[in-house]
Image (tube, rainbow, N blue to C red):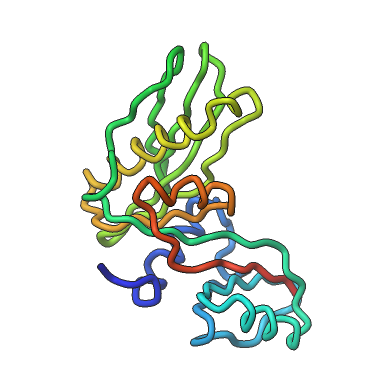
Length: 190
């Protein structure tokens, strides 16, 4: 399996696509410590790192303001359960869009969860997984359904490796389900 470092030039733009980033030039996605450079006023820098303390020290010295943090998880499509096991009274809608594919889970025909995937060059990036307050009692089950559906879509389009940009709570829930934390993504703005 290719490391996140080696495939950053592929999964970085895929991550931007699932976030609907309209101007990719407005941000940089860089591996730390390999490639951090100057950042223009008003732009965003995402440092992908296994050494958060050093990345934060660099950002502080460069007078950057931290705006967020995420966890980069990785899994092989061969090792995940890609069959959605739907909770009672839920429906799954899969929607192919121009820049990514999306899923939505409805409970009693009301949308309660959603997520996105972008498949490119043998890998896929999952992100934007969210569960609305109406579905919070089923958060783990709904996330598992969405990941299975999105992962299956990625597998069917030739992706062997999945990357998942998750919040810390999501990352903790995914560890026992075949995902491995490979890095953290620290976001900064000047």
